[in-house]
Image (cartoon, rainbow, N blue to C red):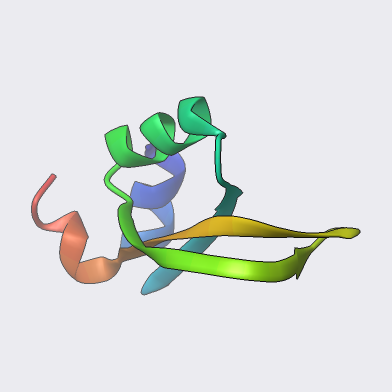
Length: 67
């Protein structure tokens, strides 16, 4: 969380995104605890070297005020 606060306050970054394979529930929970919001499900797209379904998570500067 400290990294996000630094980036949002000092570096003026506004948007972060993360993609996680379906079934990776532990990582999804960590992102949600850090304030990321699930933005959608991408179906049968190439991730690394295989086609799979994955979740997209996002964190925008406006979400920071809620922390």
